[in-house]
Length: 495
Image (cartoon, rainbow, N blue to C red; front, side, top):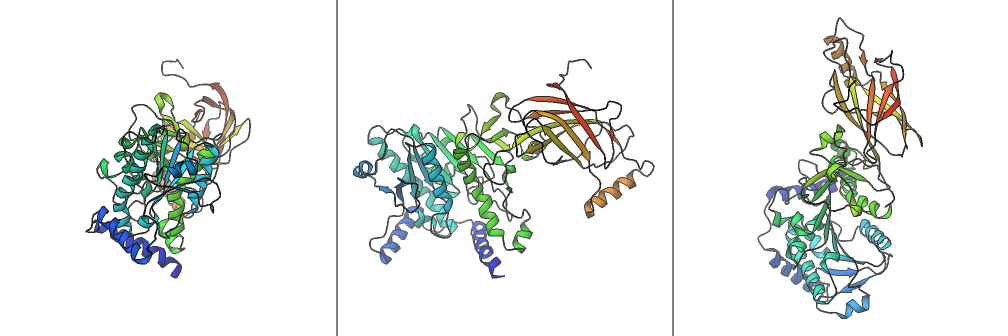
């Protein structure tokens, strides 16, 4: 039980702080003075609460070079390039008081991708290693410190805010928002990596990250629900807001069931994995630029799961992470994609439209369909067709499937109606279907063609049933479909 209790007690303490909802009586500036005062009592020569560390090596053990406000000599000594791109990496709340490993991976990826750029780590560990509510209140103070550094750099000559990219994780995303709000001018870009949700959800735009804080604000949301409150912010807060895998449970992060995670003592690891996934998606976009992941604009997660939103028309799709491109007139545009469990995270999305005919007038049927895609490069695994709401009979149903491998040009499709499994839920479905059709025990549906659209290539294909005399399918049976033409039949085209 000891393994479970420590993270859960920490979570409970944080949740109690959220429920209380009231910051400490001292204002942020006063609390900052209090931190400095307590620091002087312990160590007269203690480090300042916010430091700017220019990373001059990919070695995590290398100390780097510290920039000092109003002291231009360190800029020359550290080799700061005034005309190059400048990245500021801003960490979030910390329970350990130390940098996490993800920070060094992000530094290395940026240095590899942009060799001439300045990569600066904003170290506010003394203020982040507090109760969560206190750390939240310090975000404004730290954001103002970042803004002052940017203002001072602008005074030095050739430094341009247009070359500045602030990258903030969790609470650090809101620090970046404050910095963009306070700076004199407009920062080129802010990337929010799963911005923190508690005490920021639904608040005024001036108290959190928002599209007004930079010329381009892009956000990755990877952990937007847990224990009745959200670790990451749920609402869109950028120009484009990307929700990988719906923005909640990420593949490869262990048990999806929260109660099961608690029982096995893995909840802390799951939370860290899911929250931190935003960072690794961004790193992936830097190091695997030949395998970019694409997200698609959609109103909500359920519509995306139905496969409805795989269009790139009118800028409805975009790369994610570092490769994301600013789109005109976009604010709070919600975008979705599926990913793999690890790097490279890219998958290949397909929309499948299947018109299902019900000739025997069955009033209730809940088939479990799956497809196997056969391509010029390789074949897919068996892919389930998820029924998000209810299957429409004598209607066109749309599904989303995705593969981890590039199949190349699709050649044929195998559709399978799976037999009933031995789970209690499947047995109940079988009994309910039988009771609703006592005089028609033979369940049978008919399918003539499948229309497929590739999200990544936007190519449209039509697959016709192999034998036009045999279009029916029943539980345990399969139908084969071969590519019969490119494109889809338009509405005004005759049959």
